[in-house]
Structures are given as structure tokens and as C-alpha cells.
Length: 272
Length: 340
Ligand SMILES: Nc1ncnc2c1ncn2[C@@H]1O[C@H](COP(=O)(O)OP(=O)(O)OP(=O)(O)O)[C@@H](O)[C@H]1O
Ligand SMILES: [Mg+2]
Image 1: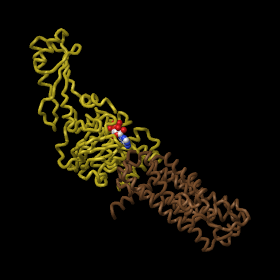
Image 2 (image 1 turned 90 degrees about the horizontal axis):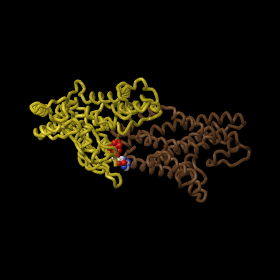
Image 3 (image 1 turned 135 degrees about the vertical axis):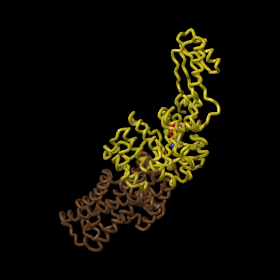
């Protein structure tokens, strides 16, 4: 095994030790809740008016006929991916800026000067954690859907078919992909700015108002601007940005962010 | 003579622990460290002193791969300065205060760092014992006092049982007992472990506590405004300033005559109050590696004899050895005037 790979494994395991703290459990709970909440709202608030099912429909305006399709099982979970994406973005940004503001990055680099290996190992274990949290969220969302469907007398005949379970798997993978994209973007932003306040101001101003203002006057933005693209991937494609182009654009952004983060981390002085 | 002046350099042969040439760091247009040549022999306890802002921390960061030098090259533990992955596993360092995770316990903090460095995490417990934190090991770092945090930071540096230990102001926030423990710790580290006589542990410690440095360091590096002001054995540094003898005659009327007598012996002196102050200058051509401080006894004896022969009775004769602080003040503070 090469020295760099060994360093990556060590970083991964060291980060795993760090993850066993209350804050991480809280964050995982938040991810889970943010997914279950849209599920509950979607089913509780669903009305009888028929709107043709479309995967890109904003999560909360769902009709009962939509819920009774094969996609119905996973509609609630899918509706939560936007929130999850933003939460993951903020969590990854802040956890990176905290390494700089607490000065822990210098303690780390004194033990492991292979900075890229550290970054990869750290991202690896953190994304694993996100995958687990998302899986828990998915399971909870499915349970909540089943219970609420029974309460609301929704016909779930289509739900436990192979097609529906395929939809569930796809929805999970897309949510995970989007979360990974947001995680990488947040990490890169944190490495670039190093300050929690600055990174949050820039990150949130960009993903919330800025992208959406641009989107209002320029529809193509949905398939161009990173935050919107990641979100489109998470929802399995939206009317303004179909899945495959969004996935490719998202991958492009993620790779660019990773390259930028690596170069910045490697070259810049650690004065924290 | 202090214990530290028994120089250990002679015992350990081999390449220096640190050997860098032309080390320079510029931030924008400001040159923070300028053309520094530093050699720290293996096996010494080296003190690194200089006023605030002199560039000590920046230099240490460059030596440990945290900050990229603008210019300069060299070796640390025999490995190239620019390849920190080759020497950092054998180093331990605390730079500019401890930096650990507030939400993690002391033990888990060390555990994680040990895993990162590829060590057995069980080492964390030994180290916690060593720095006196065993009783609080499971409390969150956030709840530690300033000195406890500092101790844990030192613990983190000790994890790797380092060949080179770099400590940047390790006594910050420590109580007197902590400072004494720090001193003992550094001394014990510098001694070769039993059965490993060949192994030279080197300590480089920056501090503003000059009395501490004087006690524990046998090698000294003085930095001033980013430039090297002195480098070499601590003893030679102090020797170059000599010492002072204060003479008090029984009768103040004899002061003038006493001063003339001392001057007649070729010793520079001045009158101050009811005393005559005599400078004992360092002998020329002293051995730079040894304890070159001038012995005052021959001069004292000559003065006493001359006074006695001339009917002057001395009621006090005090030898004041120049401290590191005196010498440091001569060298640095007069010109630097503190941080710039
Ligand atoms: N990241 C940075 N950007 C710009 N200037 C810096 C940076 N880091 C340090 N400096 C400057 O470098 C000089 C030396 O700083 P350094 O921290 O090395 O001093 P020091 O000798 O450790 O001082 P102290 O005794 O106060 O710890 C200072 O003038 C400081 O302002
Ligand atoms: Mg400093």
C-alpha cells in the first residue's frame, strides 16, 4: 500500500474517533428529521385534486392520486432532499472552517503532513456518516408514509412493488449524490475562506437569494448554477433541468471544487 | 554555574537535528524572517528567544512544514526541510498554544491524534499520566483550565516519543508547579532513555522566561526582528557579558582610594553609593564549546589583597553573575525596544 493511501486510511480512522461525539449525533438526527418532516407534511396535507405526477414537483404540493402511484412511497423522502442538501452544505462548511478557527488543523498537519490524504480520508468518513444518516432518514420516511397512508386511507397497492422499490433506491442514490456534491462544495468553500462567518455568509447568500434571483429571470440557471444543479440531481431531475445533464454538470462542479480545495490546502500556509 | 552548562553536545555525535540555511519568510512586502542559518546539534536542549514579533513562531512553523519558506533550505533530523512527511513522524510539536477539539475529552483528542499518526492509541493513557491529566482524561477539553489545556497540548506533542521535540512557549498559563514540571520534563526527555544511549533526543523550546531557558538550555538561539542575533552554547553567550563584583569598604571615606586600587589592577570599575562596582570581563580566546564564564576568584583575591595592604577593610564583597536576562537585555532590548 502506498504511503499516501496508508495516510488516507489513518485519517479516515482518526476522524472516526472524532465523530463519536454528541454534536455529530445531533446533526445526524437533524438530517433524519428534516427528511421525515416533509414526508409527514406531504401526506397530511395531500388533497384530492389531481395533478399529473412529475418527479420534479416541489415536495409539499402532492395530491392523493400522486401518492397512490408507484412513486408515492418515496415522494415524501424526495421532498426533503433540498433541505438535506443545504444542511449538509452548512455542516461540511462549518466543520472545515472550525478546523481553522480552532487551530486544530495545525495539530493535524503536525501529525500528518500529507494534507491531501487527510482531506480524502476525512471526506470519506464524513460522507459515510451522511450515507448512514440518509439511510436512517429513508427508513423512517418509509415507516411514516406507511403509517400515515393507513391513517388517511390512501391506497398503497402500488407501493411495495419492484417498480416502487426501484424508485426508492434511485431516490436514495440521488439524494446521496446531491449530498456529496453539497458536501464537497461546502468543504471547498471552508478551505478557501477559513472563516466560519465569511463562509456561511457567502455560501448561504449564494445558494439562497442569489441563485434563485438569477433563476427567476433566467430559467436556464437551473441547469447551470451549482446549488440548483445539485438540487436537481437530488430530486432526480426537474422540469428546467433534466437528470443526466444536471448530473454531469454537478459532477463537473464537484471535481472542480475538489481540485481547487486540494490545491489551496496543499499550497497555503497554515497560520491558524 | 547552572546544571545546564554541562553541555551534552559532546556526547552525541552525528548530524545536527536541525540544519537550515537562508531561511526566509515574507508576508506580502514584510520580511518576517530573514536569511536565517540555524544549526541545532543533536541531543541538546535549545532555547529559542527573542522579543514579541521577532519571528520565532514563524520560524518554527517553517521548520515543521506548516508554513512554506519564501527561501531557504536544509534538513531536519537529516531529512530535507521540504519533505516534512519524512521527519514529522519523529517530531513532536506544540506551536502557539494547544489546539484541540473542544467537544472531545482529553483522552479522545489524544486517541484521534495517535491514530492519525499511525500509533497505538493506548499511548494516549501513558501520556495523560505523564502530563498529570489522568484524573480528568474523560472530561471535555472545553472544560479544562488554561494550564490543563496547555498540558494536553504538550501531551499531544509527546505522543510520538519524538526524537525532536519543538515547544513554542510551553509554560504559557502553567502554574509554578507546572513550570517546574515542564522543566523536569524537558530535562528528562533530553537524557537518553536507558539502553538507548545512542539515541539523541533534541528539544527546541521558545520562551520568554529567560531564567527557565538559562536553567534548562545548553544551546541558545536569539532572534531579533527576524534575524539571528546569537546562536551557540548558552554558556558562551553568558560568558561574553562577564560578571560584576560589588565591594563595600568599612568606611565610605576609603571609596576613592579603593576605586583607584581596583583600577590599578586593570579592572574597570565605578563608584555607586557606598560601593565600588567592578566589572569582570570575559577572558579572551575562551573555548566556545565549554563553560567559558570567567572565574572571578583570582580577581577577587587580588582586590582583597590590595585593599588589605592599603589598610582598607572590606565589609562586603558580592559576586553577581550576569544572568541570561542581563546579557539578553544588552543584546536585544536596547536595540529592539520591544515589538515593532
Ligand atoms: N500570517 C501572517 N501574515 C502576516 N504577518 C504575519 C503572519 N504571521 C506572522 N506575521 C508577522 O510575523 C512577525 C513574526 O511573528 P511571530 O508570530 O513569528 O513572532 P514571535 O517571535 O513568535 O512572537 P511572540 O513572542 O509574540 O510569539 C510579526 O510581525 C507578525 O505580525
Ligand atoms: Mg510566537
